[in-house]
Amino acid sequence: MTNRIQHTFKALQAKGEKALIPYIMAGDPSLDVTESLVLTLAEGGADLIELGVPFSDPIADGPVIQQAAERALTSGTTLKKILSTVRSLRIKTSVPLIFMAYYNTILAMGLEKFCTEAVSAGVDGLIVPDLPPEESDELCHATRSAGGPVVIFLLAPTSTPERRNKVSKRTYGFIYYVSLTGITGAQLPDLNHVKKNVRAIQKLSQKPVAVGFGISTPEQAHHVAQFAEGVIIGSALVRNIAEHHQDPTFLSNLKALTQNLKTALR
Image (cartoon, rainbow, N blue to C red; front, top):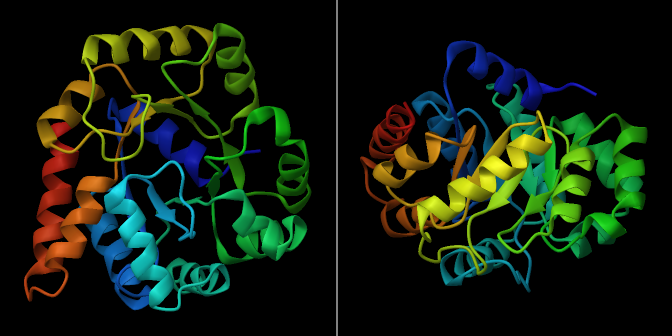
């Protein structure tokens, strides 16, 4: 099963580059703005983009992303409307799009219907932070039957060697390494410890490893890119959008910020 995610990582590897993966909350402050944000991030050099699907009880997320989810829900954002936005985006960009969604949201639509709609819309990947690999057979079967989106699993500092091995075999596209034992937006821990764990995962698997949680500056992104194949930046961007999206120069500033982050990965 090969899609835009795998193609992107292979192309980056051939050029000796690392993947910049920004995360934004779909529907914050509105889905029209989300569409503009995705296009601006792609123009600025984002290699893949994560779209958060707002949920009322986002247990893996810190205050910044929780508040973004609340704003998105208040603005009337639904999974169905996000899929419609992806359809619109696919006319304008081929950047890989990955949903980060809690399992209840997907179950509410129905696994088969969600997977079919996601493939039709142009969603490439799916991260479900509250679904452990041991309980994912039904979802994985539904995604394979529909021809996608590929399911990406997470590993944490506390993951055992057995769990690392299981996730490295089951995940598609890349392995998402959570750099800390906490919520999104927390402070990035000692990078030597992060590097040690990423290296251990890389010994188990040929699949790319992308590091997320706690990375907020170009300097931090640069250091992580020295050992990981991808760098995920979420809370810092979500905060920036919340504070500045009404500024007339916001999109041009966001593009420049994205370019700076991409440059920092070298």
